Length: 199
Image (cartoon, rainbow, N blue to C red; front, side):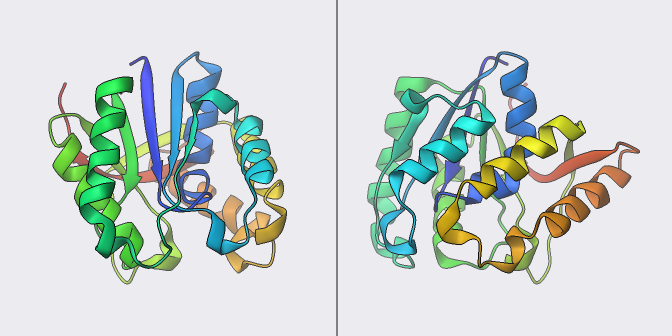
């Protein structure tokens, strides 16, 4: 595995769902492209987003920021699908992270559905944000070390405009990583829905 694409409907989704895993993979020399589909209407500014992703080790040249209207992704589904096709053809990722299929946020649902259409023949894994679920299934785990969790926490801390959100609390994020790690007897982990595999 040499290339990973992380699809993040809003700037922080990918960090919250797969930040520890991405920090681990970047340390191993794996190239990661981070695709943001909407950013301007949520209080984010471009510099804080770049700073946060830089903490994880994602190069500025590998951050793609688009700006579809928040909570209106259903109206832009075909355009979003084309964006994903464009990235697939230009970057050719070996692994793709997107939202899981149980997430009830309308933007997240559309991204999951279009990712499945575009990447159904690739290795596609759905990251999980537990506050957006009423039920879920996860069957894949990526474990990591404290240094990777620390990078995830430091990245989120750079998102100054979002610190009021309850799920940014470092103790909650750490607790979730510890809980996920229990499934594999590891110190920390993130859980994923294994949507498709092409091994």
